[in-house]
Image (cartoon, rainbow, N blue to C red; front, side, top):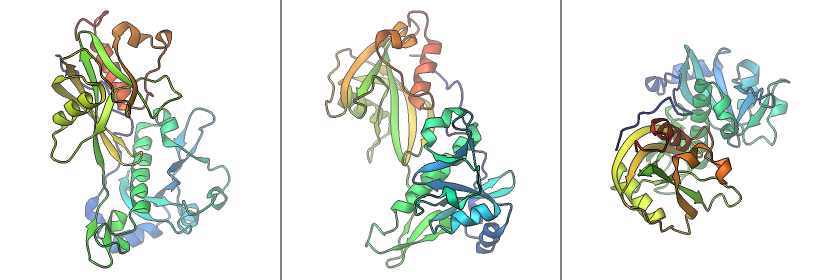
Length: 315
């Protein structure tokens, strides 16, 4: 089985930020940065990001400064220091408590948009920063209470940690590791049609969360066996992708299929099939669709196809 390197960075990767974690405990710096008119703020409203140019198909992130930033902060939601972008401090701020935050901003500032809908069109650095802000604000708005004793928590480390006001336990943002794998065998690849997309014709790579005490390779083999009944041999790492929808890191692999007969888990999949290279290169003609372009699933498929011969003979 050939190793297939990643052909290019995945969406939401390649952050331009210096996270400057050493400045998070510097209260004087944080206070000054929050008051600085040149500081950048990344607003998040109900998991959506502020952008302009979306209707024209040329989206770009809108970061706030000065009075516009202060107006959004007055909505009373959580905030957090993200780092420096070209020397300027950057904060995420959640304004979800406002029923409509746009009236708080000057006209022409764009609209709040689902990041996943346009990530493939955004400059890579902007997509990464918006994903960072979205993921961190999701954690902040959903971890207000201590998981140990149930008491309320207060932000620490410039919004990058929470501390229990009763027992003192510190809580940090969680990222759930998930494996995602393209299983290949004799010039074919295995794709599944998820129960989560009943009205779609999309077939995608299999995926699942890593369980406690499990290596990534073991997780790949277990998930493929559980979902499709296929035995897996060699497992080769491809690349990773931040996936803050809501709080995951996708760890991508190519995996060697050792068996042919598919037995699906009906709770996870509506269908699973082996697809030839020809079918994969012309999915519409064969009645199915591939995963969206900003996903690591699509990257795993594209890089495999790039390495495959005309009939998939190389793999």
